[in-house]
Length: 164
Image 1 (spheres, rainbow, N blue to C red):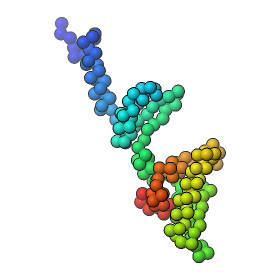
Image 2: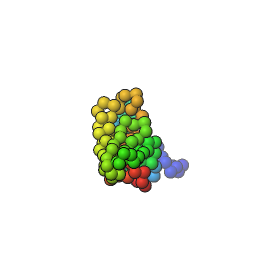
Image 3: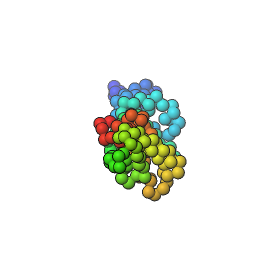
C-alpha cells in the first residue's frame, strides 16, 4: 500500500508544517488569538499592517487591529463627516466645524486656518483627557484620530477642503 501525499505519523510533521507555512504566507490577513502569539510574530503583524493587510490580535475577548498610520490618516481625511466652514466677516475670517465645539478667528484667511489647526489640536487633547466618554463627544473618535495622525500641513489642507 502506497501512502498518500499527507501521511499520519512522525513523517507527516514536516509536511503539515510546510502546508501551514504556505497557508500563512498566502493568506490575505494575519490574526493572532493571544497577546503572546502576537508578540512572537510582531514583525509579521507590522509587515501586514504596512502592506495594508488586515492584522488583528485577540486579548481577553477583545479584538484589536494594527493599521498603518498613513493609510488610516488618508482614509479618515476622506470619510470623517465633518467639514470646516470658512466665513469672511467684519474684516477678518472665521473657521468653524458644525457640530464640533471648535472655531477660530483671524484677520487673514491663512491666519484663521493656522488658528483652527491649533484649536483642533487642543480639542483632541481635551477629548483624550476627559471628553471621550462624554455622550456629546463620543462620536468624534474619527476626527480625533485624524487630528492625531496628521501633521499641521495635512490638517490645514483638510480644513481648507483640499485634496489630502
